[in-house]
Image (tube, rainbow, N blue to C red; front, side, top):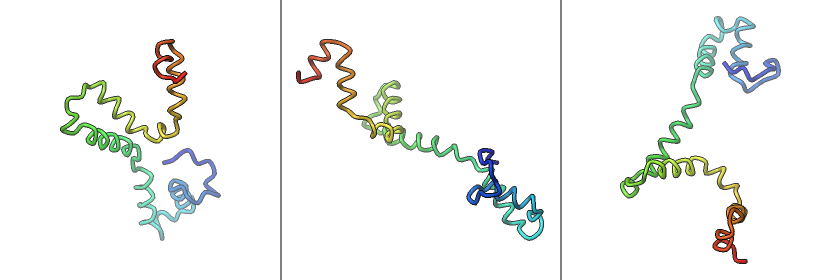
Length: 114
């Protein structure tokens, strides 16, 4: 069950709290036995597999016939970029280029207009 909820008396959205309330009022074996079983199933479902399934889906998109010759390192990099797309959307490309250009005078000359 979800142990992150600290206040089951006022919680109205947490399935584990609903199950605790049913059990504390001894309703889980009388009038609401089907509802109680449903909450038990919901509380035991694994929601962490979504990320794993999404990763394999992205891998399938990236590794198609045209890109089958990618090295393992490049493939891994493309998959990570694809999975973390939301994080990348928040980055400013100009700032990244400027910081990268500051690492050497040659890069600064090649990457900046000044």
